[in-house]
Length: 375
Image (cartoon, rainbow, N blue to C red; front, side):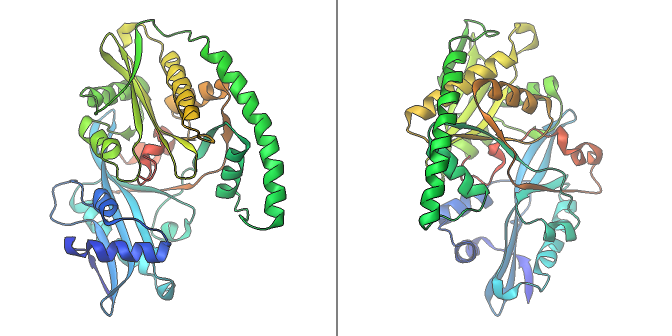
């Protein structure tokens, strides 16, 4: 058995292994987009493979991402492609593949590893903590939205007579809930208190140059930790995304960027709130809650026009901005669904941010933190 970092020419073999074990159809271009982006200065791709007789039997990878907190910008990595061939399970390959990655972490001054998974046991054995689980905000347009949600998170069967009976009941209840939500947002969209008549929302064809400045202002206003969303990051993550092309709307007051929202339509017919960030200049007198409200209303209205079954987004913790979005979304007719995935977190013992990063309730997390399928 050989455990080592993958080489660039092995990209296709790594991706083929992923598709075989996970039974998906990720393209090579999607693999390259995720794992060959520039990170900390290193000649090594942080993508570890386990080899047995010349065949890949396990993978564990990092996607380097910069984050920002009140101390400034710093490197983290997101855990991805955690896979072991079924024939090699029980051989402690997960722990073995993480050994060189822990060394990589310390060599390059990376502050933490984070990710989302329904399977936490192996991560806990490797020294990770499980500080939180994600939950969702959910706005239904049709009863079908509830069927999709239940199949995804309740593990319900997708075939048979009982499925058709169940779907009928869910659709009927969902249609009533959707009608109520539609009434709520129609009433709310008529009033946009707290926002200036100067507020303009427009589709962005490229990343706004002021994105990094807005990210920095966001941390000054709300504190905590979040991904550093500068223009190059948004170009990679949203505008060059080979999985789905999200729509990004910028909010401006007299040409000054004060926030944005990004949304996408998934293959399952559901609309997804990919990202939202709002941080007006303190001296502008703008109410951040009013801007959030306008952006959420616009997202719901636009996705309804596309024929989406509904809208889903993430709510994760008690970060002040996340709490504000949840409160405003609830007032617009969104439901709070307390089902999602567990967060896994490992903080580098040598990090000078150890205490802040370990307190995951200080992180602001959106669907932009996912691998890329929906943002």
